[in-house]
Length: 134
Image 1 (cartoon, rainbow, N blue to C red):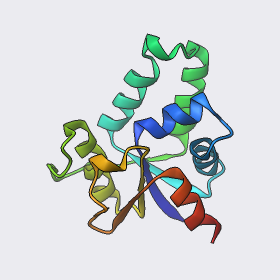
Image 2 (tube, rainbow, N blue to C red):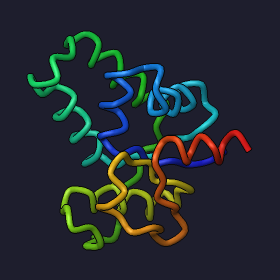
Image 3 (cartoon, helix red, strand yellow):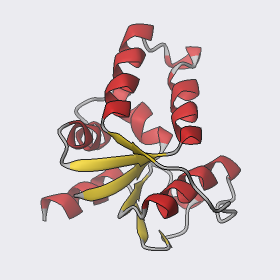
Image 4 (cartoon, rainbow, N blue to C red):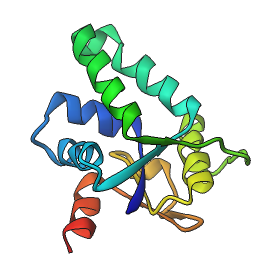
């Protein structure tokens, strides 16, 4: 099974448009076709961002979404601090990818990441879906 690290923007996009590529990626995680990996710091960021008033997501929807995601996620504890991204919070995702030995890091903002980190390819949701389908 492919291991994936999901950037927070993928989750936001999936909630905003369930039928988009990001929504499809999250459904593949929920059905067990992909194994999502996250660190405690990432789970905290997911929750903080999804609960921002500016998104106007209903509290119950966010609760169900996060509960479902947690139940389908491998929690890893990164051992190495990473400073490869110009956007400091994005380094948490690289740290997780390294600790989990993830196959892919999925983001809607590839410019904040290197093309690859260790053995993890950095892709957007569409690119991941093309890999999974082939």
